[in-house]
Length: 169
Image 1 (cartoon, one colour):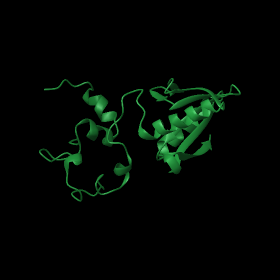
Image 2 (image 1 turned 90 degrees about the vertical axis):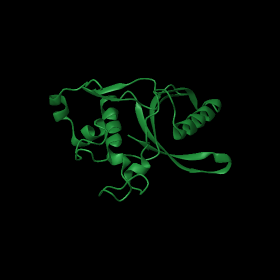
Image 3 (image 1 turned 90 degrees about the horizontal axis):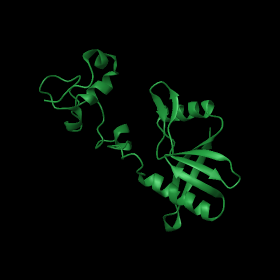
Image 4 (image 1 turned 60 degrees about the vertical axis):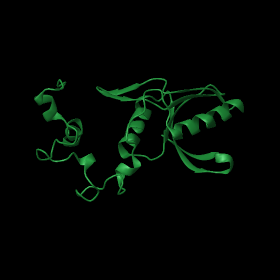
């Protein structure tokens, strides 16, 4: 039997989707019912990862802190080329966390120092969820010392060298 970290009162304050996930998909289901992630596609009204929908676009798990996903690794290689060309003086992956509000933090993907000395925060995304966009906008307002830039991979050209779309916040 596992030890419970949250009290019943704490669990009652959480959004329903979070409690379902914390309880292994059994939060809203009937006793003995299979957790949602184990159900066959089409068994519920929601689309499964196999059937498409948002879950198909989201990562199935989080990487350990400090590990780059494939898109971030491609962007790191892009920054390294810019460093070798003299455009970028320095960069670091996940250098710190910014506190946006109590219990709300934002970990930028890259902190980049340009050759001019200016600091930029680069957030690399394969797909933008609305909550992530709101978080970076709020961070840009709260920390004007940095220039916040959203980076998305557009396509891969010759030699698997992708082009990048950048959006300032």
